[in-house]
Amino acid sequence: MQKSKTTADKQKQTTLGVVFLTLFLDLVGFSIIFPLFPALLDYYLPNGSGDGSFLGAIVGQLDAWAQASGADDPALMTAVLFGGFLGSVYSILQFICAPLWGALSDRIGRRRVLLISISGIALSYLLWFFGAVFWVFLLARILGGAMGGNISVATAAIADVTTREKRSRGLALVGIAFGLGFIVGPAIGGLSSMLDLTAVAPVLSSFGVNPFSVPALISFLLAVLNLFWVWRCFGETLPETKRRQTRDCRKYPDILSIFKTGCANIRRTNLLYLFFMIAFSGMEFTLTFLAVERFAFSPVQNGGMFVFIGLILIIVQGGLVRRLAAPVGEKRLAISGLFCGILSFLFLAVALELGLFFFALALLAFSIGLASPTLNALVSLYSSDTEQGANLGVFRSAGSLARAIGPLLAAFLYFSYGSKTTYLLGALIVLIPLLIAFTLQQPSKEREST
Image (cartoon, rainbow, N blue to C red; front, side, top):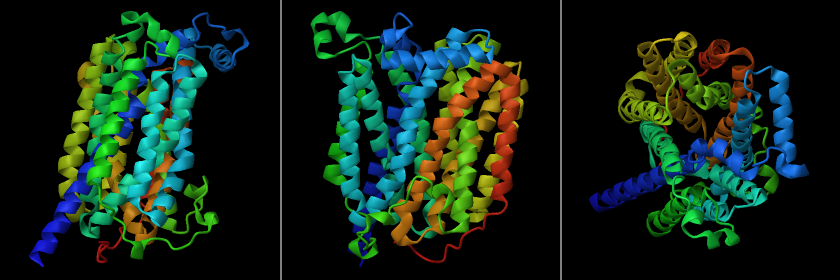
């Protein structure tokens, strides 16, 4: 009996370690491109017109929006919208695919789906490595976004190996991985882009190697490492007795499932998360512009700002949430996080001194750190054992849809109406999920899900 318990504990720790790395690399892959957006636009569209190309048509439309907005610097806004477009492509594919990966893992198990999706992510980085032509680069982002939806599977694996009482504690690992990825991804992107392989060996250009191939190569190697670790160490966490038996493909959730899930509490949590992430992804995208506008931050200082946010995220999710979830409850922690979010937006709207600015950033990190893992846990606790993957996939899909909308909306508001108005509107948006959160039930934790 003791030996069996020790084996189960060892499997749990291995599972949590593998899932942690998978989630970490997912955010690294998503955020590694953040510092590269302006340079990517200059590289793929050097003359600004595109000569009737697909990319030229996209940038032409973005430029028309920038001109119509009345922005002081339409060229800068075009570059920002271009970055938003690339981010939106990635997020839209996650929005579509996260519920599908989650539901598929409920049928065939977590391990097989993780191996398939991580292989696809590695392939997307390999395509990016050879992406000297824009359509190859875009194809890499599409493939990466589709396969990146596996975050729902990784999250469901945590739910498989944790009891209901410790669900929030286990899912806090999601936030810690995101916090680290939030720090490491942009840092890798910025630093590794300083090494241009085509400058060292110009002959590589004929194979599609480009100035951004080094960030792609690092991401590819990390994905291969993750794939090997999953293949070697990850044991299946969903036994066949707990899998969905249906083979009817119509049972897979569609992309509008965030509004149609049968459980009212899950529907409300999905809607809450959608509004929450629209506001926060928009803030995340415009925060560097705010820092430059008000405090003339350099790229290094902007990097330090994200490190500050990431470190607080890690402390909150690795320390506070893991200790407070059981005695305080997920619902109360989520409400506290949303309230901190409203305050952070209000302070960011008026912060003209560095002290208040960093206090607002700390509140921002507390907001994300308290709300994100507890909302994750609520969806898991509202779900039956056979629907963990599907429901968590739909929840993650709501966040991906928000990440497709938030940056573009925030960029347009920021350059059209200014930073103060944009962040005041952000506070108003976060008020919506706060009101929804009060209608949620605190789920029972009596039933085990092991």
